[in-house]
Image (tube, rainbow, N blue to C red):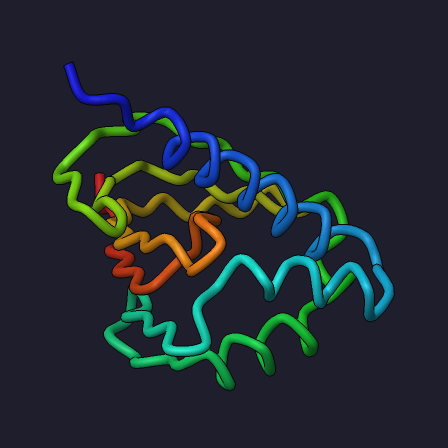
Length: 132
């Protein structure tokens, strides 16, 4: 059996950091630690089909820091898709809830790569809203 635990751990730890960043105003050092999880070549397709690169992700995090009081992320359905020499592809389901009780449910697929030091980083992410 192939071991995806370091990739699943990164999904969980990154979402814990994102949840904290959105819910509680952090400092620049915290933001830098969060952004260090992502490749400089990071790309993302948002649930609405918008393309984001690393600079757009950086701007999004800077704008949203501490602005979603009570924000929570619940992860489920972590699944292994493919493991390769320099990383892996996994999928997961993500339920976001804010203080007003608004929920957004999405399925995500992430392509991870390992940087030169062997650290797992986010290379590409595609999110799709779940309806019903």
